[in-house]
Image (cartoon, rainbow, N blue to C red; front, side, top):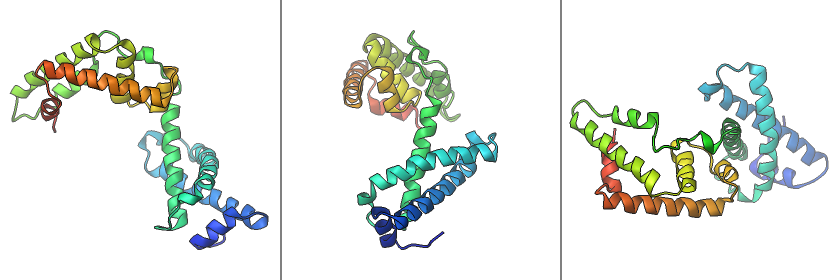
Length: 217
């Protein structure tokens, strides 16, 4: 594999002919190697996969990453090695693709529909430090207020969006797809929902600052 300076990488990738073809081949190989390292060393959730499976995933992600790097060459500012920057781009793509795969079959119907935050409330209440046992009661009361607000104040669509994004951690573009809307409309939906929720909780004496203080580690 040819060693290149930052300027040479940019020139070769922006060029044409054999020099560009070789640069693309080398870049894809470097990105695949970087992605494979990430998948095999930093993703415990993939520990059960065989090396061949991880390598196949890395190969697929590297194809997309190579195209993304080419599309964003003008954003490279030279603050680091070009290959370091490109590998970071590739790893971000791998993370995004893994998240999308996780929620590919996700349905908003799987979220709670009866005002119950499911295991989330138990987890948060039980996180109370032993030195402050009285806080467990406060947490439970606060969660009851939040549950009522989710059911009584928000529309089903607003609640589904908030639960998917903030409780389930579903990527925004997947939530938008499941709601048959676009990112901008979803931003507006979430903004309105959070404002309604905040105002309602404030009327109940549950300020955001108070709630956050209850659930500090």
